[in-house]
Length: 284
Image: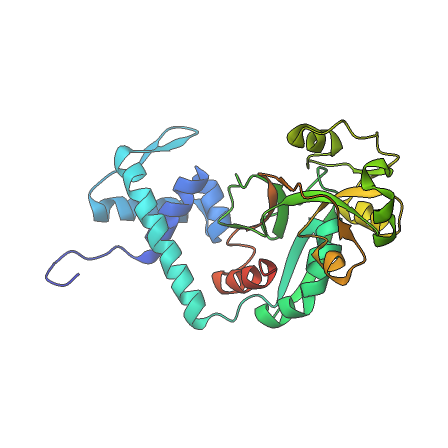
């Protein structure tokens, strides 16, 4: 710092402090940083001596941050994050392979049409993993995920793909029959279903679905094949509505407060590739 005799502590000491504070253990910090437990402990002791303050309360089997350590931690994390981001933006080429996890419907209806743009924008190869919406989702920190919900995730990066809107759709040749009398196609999952739609707009309760799919992709495919009316995600079936293979029915659109979110940790993707991913996947 200009005009000051204060010298910053070595970065390796600061990194040892941040890892230990975040993980709550010298041993865990040693595993993450590739050091031995005594080496981590020594670096933190050196840091405390340099700062003239105790950062941890050491007990036989546990450690806890002191008031000084707890106060300093967020400043350290912001500084390290900024250093990492700027280094990546200026010097890193990014990961050559990215793993992306999503529901089968998102893969078929949102990702597949955008894959060539994704590869070009990120300069990476993609490994795509599918899961059933509402079932077991991938939780690994090394996987970029597309999850359905209200956005209350704890990931470093997160952004909604689109605003979720639901409306009845069917094949064009069924429109003349009067859609209220057509068979219903249900879709299992966290979205509102036909009974929610009827309650929201004050219309008579619709018939019990004769067909129920476990994916939005399946429900839309059945509607496109003329099997009845599906309560579909308008963003996901936008291409079918544009090419005329599906027709939106009625004027009532259900605006849902949950949608698909793109989420990731810093260990899964760098900031530059994350921004490129967002640019492609959030475009209509």
